[in-house]
Amino acid sequence: MDSLADLPSGPFLPATAYGSARVAEAERRLYANRFWHPLAGISQLPPGSCLAVSLLGQPILLSHPLDGPPRAFLNRCPHRGVALQDPAEGTVACRRLVCPYHGWTYGLEGTLLAGAREADFLEPFERSAWPLAPLACQTLGSLIWVALAPGPIPLAEQLDLVLEEAGPWLEQPRLLLASANQELACNWKIAHDNTLDDYHVAIAHPTTLHREQGPVRHYRYRLSRCATLLATPHAAGGEFLTFGLAPWTHLLCWPDGRLALISFLPLDPGHCQMVVWLLGKAESAADTQAWLKQLQAFLAEDQALVEAAQIGYASGLVPGPPHRLEQRILQQQALYRDLLGKALLDPASCGDNRTGAS
Image (cartoon, rainbow, N blue to C red; front, side, top):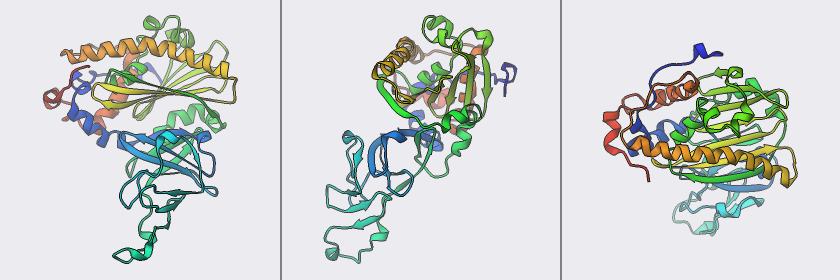
């Protein structure tokens, strides 16, 4: 779909879907598990290192063997479930992983090298029977992407518009220059909807994001099943590209090759974690901080709006009619409805389990 005339129409999600504990539990199984998630920059994980992270409560260990691509595993020893590495350690240079509980030792490719006192197990012990639990892992766009469950939507399909519109950019190696995390007092879908909402930019961000994106009359749209694109002419030449990506990520591409990734990770029905990554070539610390400050200016404006919307949604709101500049929201919500099932999102089904804003 390449024009506003082709964009979807229909009602927004019911307000009950933004506060229901039942919906929040289901969307982790039926929605989040269908996608790939960016968990680290490739520059964070040089060969011969490991990095512990978490996603939706799952402990994950990223490793980079000396003679192979990055790998991903559940961060738990198969013996008694203890984490092999603490996320607080950051990137750790290592040739092997040693469980701090009973000393089982693993290679970075996930195979068990040795179990402590192997001769004393009560049953015959086979090292090959106890590998780390692997997760699907791919690298693309200087990022490491991981899927939590088998059979995800192919990464090339999830990022199809990005590959078509910004493929050459993605091939350029980039460093993770800066990151920032902030908790928002709203459901992740409210924050995600807002970042897809082109109707509010000129009104809510007149001196920040609106100056970056320019007049509405120059907006160019493209849509696919998993992604949306808003492209606008940039004052420095070329186009400024804003991709909305399932499940809850946004990729901003500047003509000079800089990339910003903004994700809204669910915490509970009334809260989410906003994660911002800046990727590019080596810049001075001052330039990177100025860029981060520029982004945080409009994100702070959005924070006030999305947290107010959470309160409004919890008060029994029936959302009003969609505007033509809000149809990127409808596109992503159509995919969300398709994967969760319309019955689960019926107000009568999820309303009894709502949690209010806090």
